[in-house]
Image 1: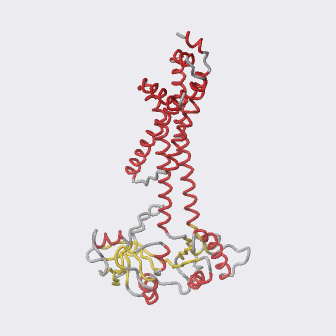
Image 2 (image 1 turned 120 degrees about the vertical axis):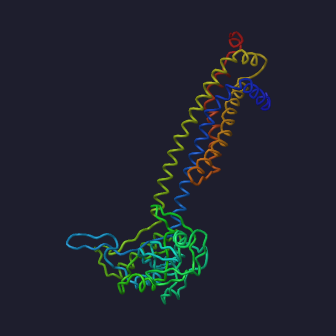
Image 3 (image 1 turned 180 degrees about the horizontal axis):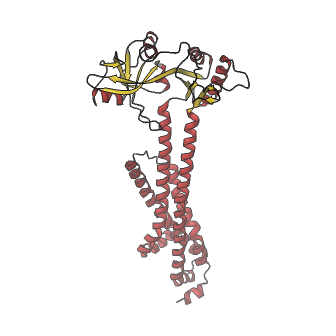
Amino acid sequence: MTPLATLKVAGRALVKNKLRSFLTVLGVVIGVAAVIAMVAIGEGAKQRVRDTFASMGTNLLVVQSGSGRQAGVRGGAGATPSLTWADLGAIQTEVPSVKWAAPQLSARVQLIGDEQNWNTQVIGTTPTYFDIRSWSMARGSRFSEGDAETGSKVIILGQTVAENLFGPGVDPVGLTVRVKNVPFTVVGLAAAKGQSPMGQDYDDAAWIPVKSFQTRVQGGLGNYLAGQIYVSAASDAEVARAESQVIALLRERHRLAAGDEDDFSIRNLAEVAAAQEESTGTFTTLLAAIAAVSLLVGGIGIMNIMLVSVTERTREIGTRMAVGAKGRHILMQFLVESMGLALIGGLIGVGLGVGAAIQLGARMGWPTVIRPDIVLIAVLFSAAVGVGFGLYPARKASRLDPIQALRYE
């Protein structure tokens, strides 16, 4: 019996019982669709975590002063100034794994536009800060190194600040904003960044040259840097090395003995992002495993229906064997039927799963990532389910005694 003839016989058997075939396929359809939809949503969540942390900066380390202790009471991180401007210069020039370093001094300030005012975070920094944060300008340009050194009265606005001061869609470049009653000229409008992992609006901020911040907004602490140092490693692979080198440099510069605690702290955002992505990946795997259970239920349904089919078609099997069909031909026919049911269910499930993932992602405002390898695995797994659960009924059919089968009523 040729493979083509086997396919024709199996196809006729499936078409003959359309409703039963459809109900059998339904379990596999639901299983495959659930697996693909859950994995797509989970992968979208992982992508969202990556994008969120990427928006915070490139290979970012955040260095800040440590906590102080007075009469047994310890302050929080940054409570005691310990970082100096010389530390910033040393990190920039003496650590080979560091690409950029920039200060961030910040304060809440009331900004005044033409007819509106808005309270926001004003940040004093250098142009390198925007390289570290991978932050481009939607309009205009960022201020220059010369502006940072001379304390020019120029300002860059975030999207939220610009909209609240001048209205949506207005180009603020060239307009004047008063910062503590000091007029600053808007030279740039930062591109929209969205929210941080903690829900903070990145676009609700304004940036001025660091020297302007010290003289116009908040007095400095002399040689001490009253804020944070943003550090960008040369590459992803260099982040851990950059962290250890910065720690060693600052301990040496601050003359800390081997047993002394650091008088500064470093946050490695790459580690935070990796932990978040790992937890999201674990959740995705759990969802996929739960969804895969329905595939096994679908396989049991296939086995059940194939056993019923063997019982119903006992005389047919006996007749075919009497006219020359071998046991392997009967085995192959029933295996093809069960695998056909599973494959049809798998293909329909792929379409439904992709559609469901896209719809869910659109409703929740969530990115959806359809992985071709997961789609392929789901289809192949459904075929394997058909073969695995169809094997017992097929073997039972192939081992029937032709004489007993012909006598079966």
